[in-house]
Length: 470
Image 1: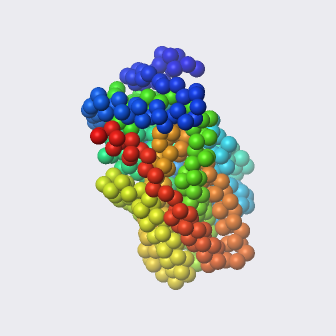
Image 2: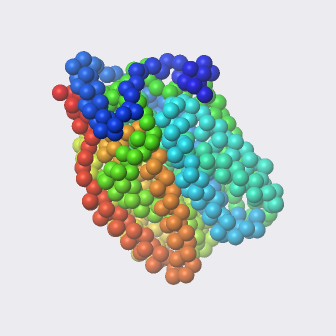
Image 3: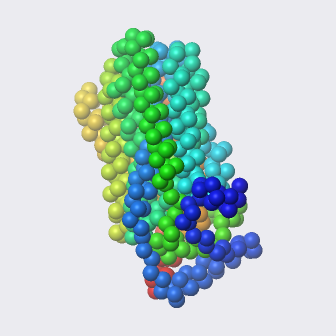
């Protein structure tokens, strides 16, 4: 489908400007010189950039859209014992309803990133919202006890749709927000994913009774599936009507430069995988977020080990972890916008994640679940708060490569680490217990901290922005 035909069908925002492209089909080394010349031209023109008020509406819609997808991630695993009893499946099968989010993302990341680079935010958001809605409706028809396979199919459709979500926050922030707000906007965009995870932790245990009879559980599951399907349907209509691709004019010099460079996916990919700082960040980011995925997937099992019957508490502890992380995300975003100290902030948050994980590990068996709530706040604030910090640091060390490709590869590596870490964590919980399992996660985080310390503070986007001001 050509850009002209997309515009004709209103998938591309008609108001989006057609920007002349600078060809990059020549040597790889030409890209940096082109970027410098464009920045020089922007400086000589003395162009004044302005931001549009509706950028907050666009960001708000994306946050809710992202939440509608991620809230379904732990929909089954947070009530694992109930799902096992009702559908007659094993715990490992239930765990795969979470891990399918990770495993589907890996092979789809490259076509997904290419699609985002070649179309725009509106097209990808519409497709992702439709897939999220479709998967939710498939689950509505999976309530009969012999239809777990259909629910798993719906979960897979929703998981595939996240390809059109996870890469978006840094792109949306760069396209819609000025240089002094881009980190905060990215943090808020990631906040949407965390918000959905938080709802996904607390909603299923509240709606589905752990001690209910089979007919009662069936009624509870039906209510839960209908609520989510209805919500995603309304959201899809709103996105179709109101979500726009880009403002009429770029909000910053960095965004202007991004528009002026022709996106070459294979060239960008080659430059990214040969970027030392980016490769180190991939590993450290994967270790941190992979640990978070493992804890989130198996939280029900871990909490019930020491506090039998505390299904609702398990969901609330997950909620506490994520809500604390949302606060951490916003705080870290504000710090980055004010200080632009990406390396120092990333390293500090990572090291604090190790401390938080250690405290969580040694308070889990204290016998007072209120203490576990408190330790979860500390763990979540730093571990989950690290997510947007890593995104923004990646955008800095890889600029002017497309944010969709940069964040896409970052998320793909995260899924691989998430699958491996979750399987390892599940195996260790069953063989050596939670203490050694959690200490292993602490070791992974400590290793990630050391890798983060080795990353150089090569802030290319900040350099481009500063050059434009001179």
